[in-house]
Amino acid sequence: MRFIRLTVVFAILFATVVCIAAAQTKQATTEKEPTLEETLQWIQAKLKGYPLSTSFINPEMTAESYELSWEECRVDFTITRQIYNNGLIDNRTLKFSFLLKDLDSNSIKFENKTNLNNGYIEAFITIETFLKKEVITVQTDVRKTKFSGEVVGIYNGKCSGFRIYTTNELAERLAKAWQHAIKLCGGNTKKEIF
Image (cartoon, rainbow, N blue to C red; front, side, top):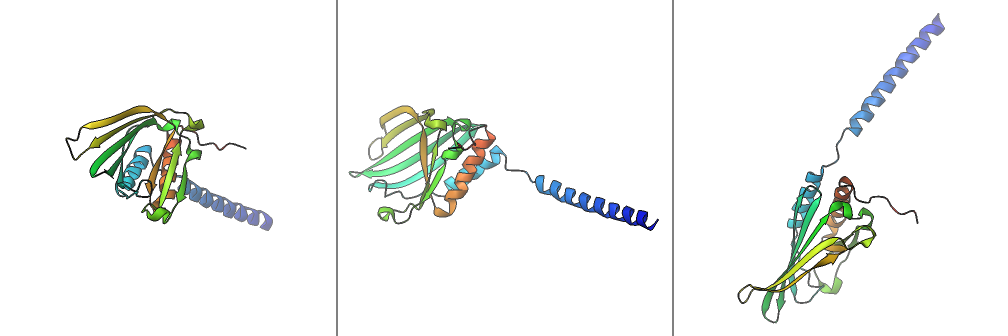
């Protein structure tokens, strides 16, 4: 009889421990990952907060800023560069349009750079398409602002990637956010085995 009582007590204790462990596991797994909307809003907020000098790319360049807009998994990413050129200020705009599913999350690399030709850029992120296919639409225009502001050069074409300049502190976090957005839209997230 005593053996039966001990067995019942141990069974009750075991069941209680299993229930508590299951409840803790369920609580840990119910934390939701950010939605696509939340992820892209976070990226947009961080990019707008860091207009940077990029003088190391081109000694005449003075600023580069970013704008992100989207509709579900279709993204427009705009880079605006302000460049002093022979006394004129050129505003160069590059607009990249793409589907997030076409990007390769494994291609996203971030590099920390400091004191690169005495420029102010600390880091950058490179984002490319799956298999480097040229499926990103890019439109570029150059405006001479000292005169009428007219467009003096336009380029339309395709490319396989782009680069975002940022700070050391933010580079890895931005890379992870882009990877998360790509994953949510069905882009390539699997690493090659070799």
